[in-house]
Amino acid sequence: MAEHVTCQEVVELVTDYLEHALQADEAALFEQHINFCDGCEWYLDQMRTTVAAVGRIDEEDVPRETRDKLLAAFRDWKRG
Amino acid sequence: MTRIGVQHSKASADEAELVARLRAGDERAFEALVARHYGTMLAVAQTYVKTRAVAEEVVQEAWLGLLQSLDRFEGRSSLKTWILAILVNKAKTRGVREARSVPFASLAPEGDERAIAPERFRGPQDGFPGHWRAYPGNWGATPQVALEDRETLRVAMRAIAALPVAQQTVIRMRDVEGYGSDEVCAALEVSAANQRVLLHRARSRVRAALEAHLDG
Image 1: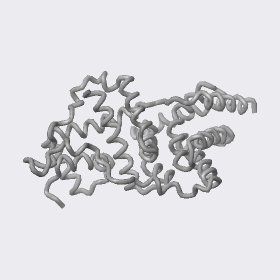
Image 2: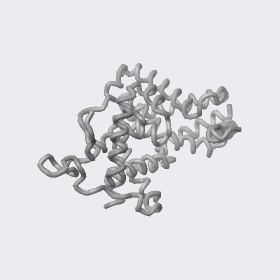
Image 3: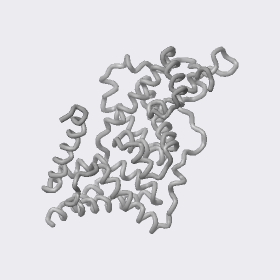
Image 4: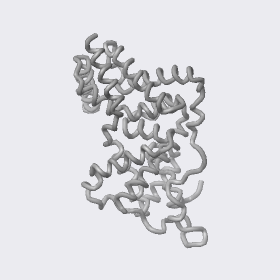
């Protein structure tokens, strides 16, 4: 195990870190780096913000044809 | 009620209410549920069948299946887990009919993909190789309103829609819908490690799109 990680390595470890998938010694190196490096601290914050933004997507465009078909099916179902 | 149970109970209560509205024939509840899950269902279906057109049919079949079994839904699993089970079932049946029996191999992450272009880090000839040339933006100092703006969300949605299907499916399931990693691995038949690589690549690309939008 290396004694430190570079910024370039940190950006590739972010998801494993957030997923708690790093080994204890890797996680310690990661956190040690974040504590001393503003750039990587901000990057980690950007990734968290990204996850939060994606989590706010609450609906997507359903093609009109599909929506109409499904609504028709729902009405049929309602009638039993 | 214990404190730990509060969140879960609230979600189950909301869900029980939604199911009750569906059973009562509430069209707006049904439309909202479809809008909420459509993108993810389509992405998952596309990992099993050959074309988007067939994937759309699979999604429609899944909704019909859901309506037919709505009376039997007992709330033992969450609604979204139940929806996913019906979808995967329909998609597998269709995938087998189409003789596309092993689409999953194509879900393995391909090639080497960097979260950040190598030029943004100092090279081996510079002092501090591997360190940022210029720091990324401090979004903690960005007004909250810009981060929560409708347009910012649209940028994220467009970035997701442009992802390769495997990455798109994983980020939709994990971050849009909130499925657990175990559910994603089971539905897509990918390993935990591959699921994380796909999630990482997807999140990294969406972050880059947000960066281009927010930091210009």
